[in-house]
Length: 267
Length: 216
Image 1 (cartoon, rainbow over the protein chains, first blue to last red):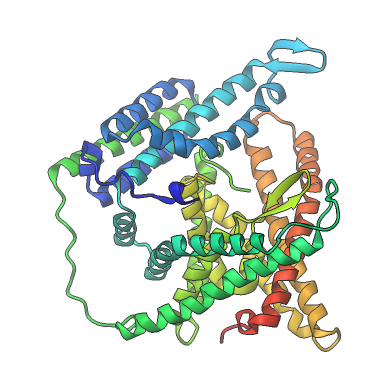
Image 2: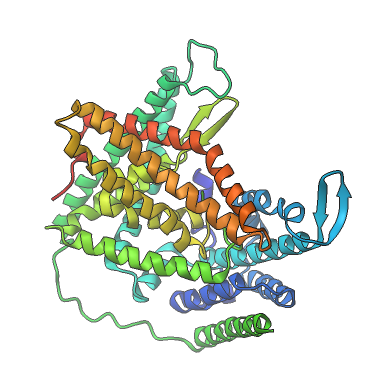
């Protein structure tokens, strides 16, 4: 689990996308992501793919980063869309017994896969070029409630520690014989003893986390958490011209996608 | 049970975000009515992280294994905190592991968070049955129902959304059959989630009962 958890591995690179201020980058790229999610016409697929490739190239993120992150969701989407060419449509391309391959299904599958790749890649460009704390700060400045921001930051802070605790606990349980049942395991049969052991493992993990949260809360209170103080007005960082134009361009592109899509639907 | 990016139409994604906004507002309102809402934040945050990590535990059912969703259990333990906890957990899953997605975060949060809050209300009914049934029994039964209901409603919403929105030209009878069929195949998983929740609640009742008590 540990290598995939490293979110900030490439956030210190130098690139035009890294230079884009987090708050404006969030607005610009999320607008593009939603515009891509609305694509239903093939005429928009090529511009969507070109924009995504251009953004990824500009971000200077290694290809390895993207491939590693596409691995799991890619498998899921394939499982969902591979059914489409055989299940939906009227124009038969190929037939073998009861199995038919439909042209409309192939088109829908292509569209879903391109849209999926464009949205995910743009999302990973945003996450790969912005430190996690700056991202939460940007969300907070855009109206994310303080309770959600605090919970997210605290959960992120302890995620790695709790993952390590679970690994240690699982190792300790394995050394004490977890899963080595006397009975031979049979197919599709639930081992209740093992279920009880796994429930105890999860319960212990929750109790440890809860007890830790009590200590964390006391430490936070001692440092003044929850005491309302009048903070000096933290002025928004000034918007640099580069970030301003990059955001304006993204919003224009997103708006163009939406207009073309709406016109196409009206026809 | 996570809908990935690129599958749902933009309108559905936007609707999911609107419903998530409303549900988050309501959950935060309930939380802010508590005497000291800030005291609950570290508990909610660390349990969110713990649930995120615990969802990687696999239950072996030879020849395969399944992993749990635990949204019913989250509701049982966290009450209204379960909704923000699920929202944050899903955000981490989308950005760290690639489960779910950023555009579908709202839809996924509604699909898992609202059943979690319903599971919480269902579980709290055990207080009314404590006199009629042995305490451990009522706790186990309502934990089972809460855990099962959490996953059951999530599974039903998931199949309905995927089957109804992905293949545009399925007829409604075929859609209905597909949804019912998929739900029936998942009944054993719903049972496993319920049993696991009941076992875990009984363990907590024995070891740390205050984790199951409703905070004032």
